[in-house]
Image (cartoon, rainbow, N blue to C red; front, side, top):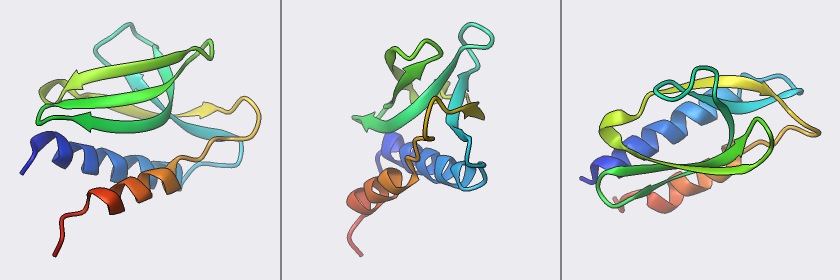
Length: 106
């Protein structure tokens, strides 16, 4: 079992469930607990690398692209609803596709 893949799958399921509860004017974001207070990013995608790194892709409050690589032992992610600039970006269907692609054969 790849620990990063296991955490990645749980993060995807959590983001999908959170996004399903959002209204039409919000999109899923994350507050990075261990960084500057209030630092929020809009999540565009999530990935993993090797057995121990989780990757978050998104945009900061200024709309600039960001990528966070974090060791699985340090992941503390507060999912938040952030105002969408324009139509809300829904990533749940992309994350569900990722889950299907990484599923272990039965």
